[in-house]
Length: 236
Ligand SMILES: [Mg+2]
Image (cartoon, rainbow, N blue to C red; front, side):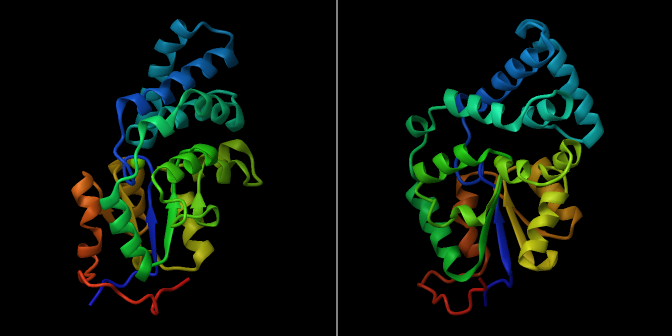
């Protein structure tokens, strides 16, 4: 008997693919550049200040914030400007490759369960990553909540930040949108701070992707047999 979930929410970065320093370095780099630009300081000065702000925010949210969240929390920078800069610098298509084992595992889970993607990454880059990984059909645009989804919310910027992980409102938004109960929802993610802890706070079940093997083992953990399954019972 398979585990009973009405919705499985996947994180993107570090969950559907292995992160790498080459990718990770772009986000703090762009954040510091734009923070410097917005304040008229040099990038060298901002390097120090930004790290202090990041520590300050870490104490505030009780965990390590991303550079992206730190940037938007403290500096007057438009989401769009940040996205454009990241998208320009990051040649993701030459860094990532499709992972047949991951595709197989996720395709299998997709046959029985309703899937959704919740990422702090921006819409354009998420799309490029999913396409490169050959997972864009499984997570079509209508089944993604990314930084541009936050941007499009009709509310003040400070309020919007609560929809960025590890804030809880993004998770609540997704639960409401599908009308699912937290205990019938599974969060699959690599980050203790951004995925596991906030989901747990809301009563969402969690699956911590600590390495690639853990991702490949998801169908088995869900109780899915090795044989093919029908998609009759899937909730849309
Ligand atoms: Mg992640």
